[in-house]
Image (cartoon, rainbow, N blue to C red):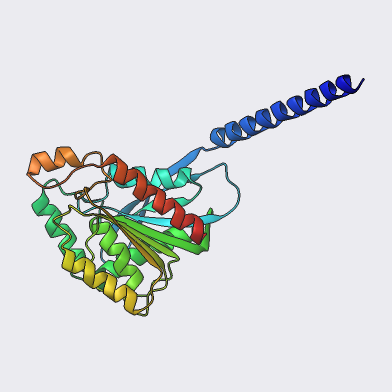
Length: 275
């Protein structure tokens, strides 16, 4: 009888364990199946120019969620920045890939990219106006909790995200990838956001002295930040199209899968801790 009782107990436990595993599997399946991205192009403007953005969220999530601005590389608002917005939406955020050049303008050559980015970078009031116009669109979207906002950017976009944070924008978190850190507005006591910077140690566009100066400025105000350097990574390490562009224009651009994955995980950790 004792042995029969033990057998019965074991059978119950095995059955319960199987049910739990099935329940877990069903839950994971449901979560996956309920991600349905709704994306749309949005036009917004300042007094002087119209800009073309891309806003995306999971339409099957009812509750409001944090909104995240995504700022493009110096090439302009393209498919790459939209893909990053999609990835953020899949994580449960509402993301808006913004247009800092106006009219959805893209650069076909590094010379054009340098000119377009220089116009914005060298005019902080202009950059601020364009950023604010996008921010208003994002905050007013019905899926967004306007009290929870972050901004991320790549290359030129990273330096713009950091600069906007340094001007005192009400951002909870900011992340910059393969971004210059000699900024139009350096870190100061107006900075409110948690900051993540992920750069390549083999990136010739980011001199060590500028990194040292950036860290010193952040330390001087006791900023909440993390600076990650991937020793072997070159510029544009998060972009799978970097190698082709590097070869085409003879530039030190190269995708690095490991640095890409690790920097994205660092971003996810930052957003999770913040929100």
